[in-house]
Length: 306
Image (cartoon, rainbow, N blue to C red; front, top):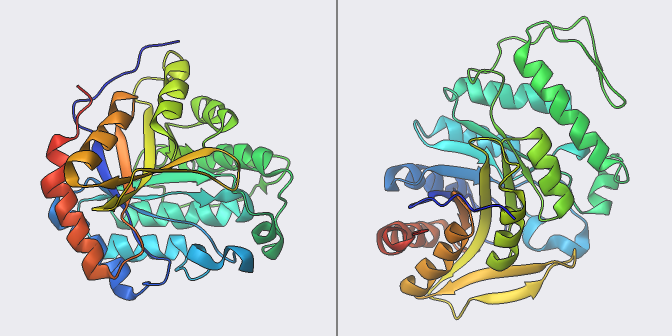
C-alpha cells in the first residue's frame, strides 16, 4: 500500500442540476453564473441521452450533456468546466472529440473531459451501441481522441474507428488536448485510469472504500494524477446515508448541518481526494444557488485533509 498524497484544501466543483423534476434554463444559466461568482473551481455536466423508462427519475428529464456544457462555457469566463461523465462507448468518438475540442477552444482551454463506460444496457440499445464491448471501446476512444487532439492531419486505425485523409483543425488550446479523467467506482476503472488518463473520478463512493483504493494506487499514479469524487450533499438533511447502488457497490450520501458536512467532506480529502464535485439535490435553481452559497461560505472553510 502506498501513502496518500494529502492536500490542505481540495478544489470544489458543482454538478449542474440539468436533470430532474426542477429542470429549467435557470438550472443551467443561473447555477453556472453563480458557481463562478461564488468562487467554485469547476462546474460539471451529467450524461444520459435516452434512459429506459424504469430509470425515468432522475435522468429521464435531462438536457444533453455536451450541448449544456457549451451553454455553460458561453456564460462563464474563468471557471473550469467538465463532464461527469460522458459515456463515450455509446457515442461517436470522432464527433465527440470535435465537439469537445471546439468547446475547449471557445472557452480558452478550460475543459476537463470525464469519460466512462456507462451502465444502462437499454440506453445503449436505444442508441444502437455495443454494450458488451464498451470497455474496449472506451480504451480505443481515448487513444483516438488524443490522436485527433494532437495532429491537424490525424491517422488512426483501430478495431472500432478508422481515420485517414482527415483534417482536424483547429487543435484544442490545451496542448495534446484537455485532461481526461475516467469515471467508475470499480478496480477495473481505476486501473484503466492509471494507464490512460490524468485522473480517476468516482461517484458516491464510501470514503473508506475510496481511501483503500487510493492507497493501493498511489504509488503507481503519475505526478499530477487527480483522485476526484462526485458526491451528493443534503445540506441540513438527516444524513449521512448509505445505500447499495444498482451495480451492487456501497454508496454514500452526505448530509446534516454544516459542521457535519464539512467533517464528511474532509474524510474524502484525508483519503486522497484533491477535487470534489458536489451535487446539491433536486431543487429549484434559486434554492440550489442558496445551498451553493451556504456551502462555500459555511462549509468550505472547514474542509481539510490535515
